[in-house]
Image 1 (tube, rainbow, N blue to C red):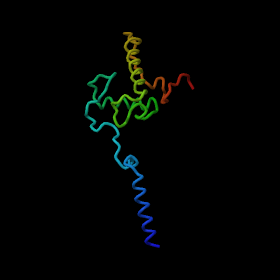
Image 2 (cartoon, one colour):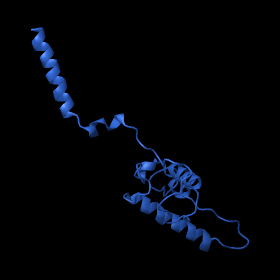
Image 3 (tube, rainbow, N blue to C red):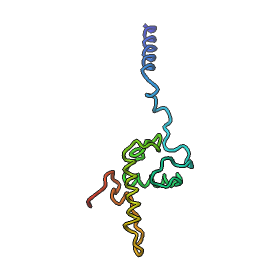
Image 4 (cartoon, helix red, strand yellow):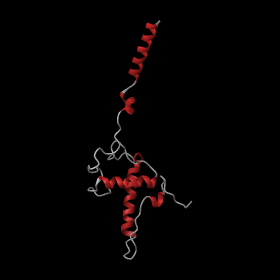
Length: 134
């Protein structure tokens, strides 16, 4: 009886081992969060100047996180931040262009203080802009 029980345990372990693929063990492998080198130049900048240091890009992205109440994965593939596979990344770029243009053209009066537009002005920590006061 013991011999049969041992064989059943061995057969069960082998069956479980065969059923588990390497992708099922992804939790056991380290996940690369963010760029491997904080001093490496950023890739795929389309609105910001290409020579913008990674630390400045990261600081700007953190303001986006807070202004929209989202995490990096909302706009980025966190295994490769340079990929353009998520629509929110293009939307963010469009709004960056819009705010830069607004600052340059609309509020360029000599006597007026420089108006700085940002995501928080409309989003107030929400994914969707808050269009009416509470």
